[in-house]
Length: 102
Image (cartoon, rainbow, N blue to C red; front, side, top):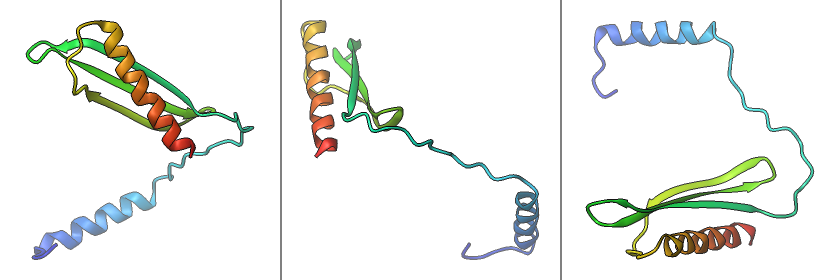
């Protein structure tokens, strides 16, 4: 803080005392055998945004039971069929998986 006030130090020490008495939270990733491949799962909502007729797409990249990357975005192209929207998101998922695998 650039210009601390008189009560700021007291608040800071109160927070430190509180945190000292609390247990720490950790994430434990168990060892697993290598699956050998990265799995990409994708989905799209065709024409989900009514004003612009754009589809929303998203996906997840997984290596075994571990999530590597998650994304959700509005598609740049306006698709006329739900199959086109799915094809666009599948291409993005494949490109992301290839990029991670290399």
